[in-house]
Length: 256
Ligand SMILES: Nc1ncnc2c1ncn2[C@@H]1O[C@H](COP(=O)(O)OP(=O)(O)O)[C@@H](O)[C@H]1O
Ligand SMILES: [Mg+2]
Image (tube, helix red, strand yellow):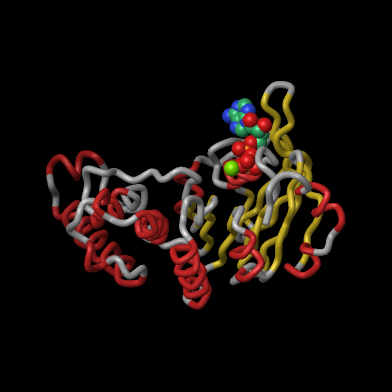
C-alpha cells in the first residue's frame, strides 16, 4: 500500500446555485498533521462533510486507504477508520464522560438490536469490550479521573477534548477536527496543541480546520488554504504565511 492514506480528487459540492467546494484535490500521507484554513464560508466544513459521507460530492472522488469511499454513508466510513469532531460541541450533557465515549462506539460494536434487547452474551461481550476501549481512550486523553462525572461538569477545554476522545474510541487511523480550539482561551489552546502533538506520536493522521493561526502554524506540517470553495495555496507553514494570495484572502478578515 502507498503511504497516501487519503486522496481527494477534484471534489465539488454545490447547493443549488452555490458552489461551496470547487474542484478541490488533496493528498494526505500517513502520520501527517495537515491544516485546512480559509476565511469564514470558504467551504472548509462542507469539505469535511464530503470526506466523512455527510454529503456526497456533486463531482469528484475520494479514496481512503486506496478504497473509493465516494458516496459511502458516515458509519461505513467510520468503520474503515476515519473519525471526526464537529465545529459545535455535540456532547450529551445528561450522560457521564464514559457514557459519552461509549455512545460514539456503537456503530463499531458487533451486537445488533435483538442482541441488545435480549442482553445476549454477544451483547454483553461487546459492551465489556466497548467499556474497556472507552477507558483506554479516557486514559490517553487525560479524562479518566472524570469518567463518572457528567459531561456538563467539565471545563470547556476538556469538553472539547472529550469530543476527541469519543472520535478516538472508534479506533480510527485518521482524525478530522473542525475548529478544535474554537472558544478556547490561550492556556486551553496551548494544552490542545500539546495534546495534538501527542496524538501524532500515537500514530494518528490528523487533518484539522482551524482559525487560530498560532495553533495552525505551530503544529501543522502542511497547510491547504481554501477561499470561496477553491484551493488557493498549499505548502509548509512558512510558505503559507508569506503567500500573497493567502494574505489577500485574509485581508480585512481579522486573522492574526
Ligand atoms: N447544507 C447547506 N446548504 C446550503 N448551503 C450550505 C450548506 N452548508 C454550507 N453551505 C454554504 O456553503 C458555504 C461554505 O460553508 P462552510 O463549509 O460552512 O464554510 P466554512 O466552514 O469554511 O466557514 C457557505 O456559503 C454556506 O452558507
Ligand atoms: Mg466551518
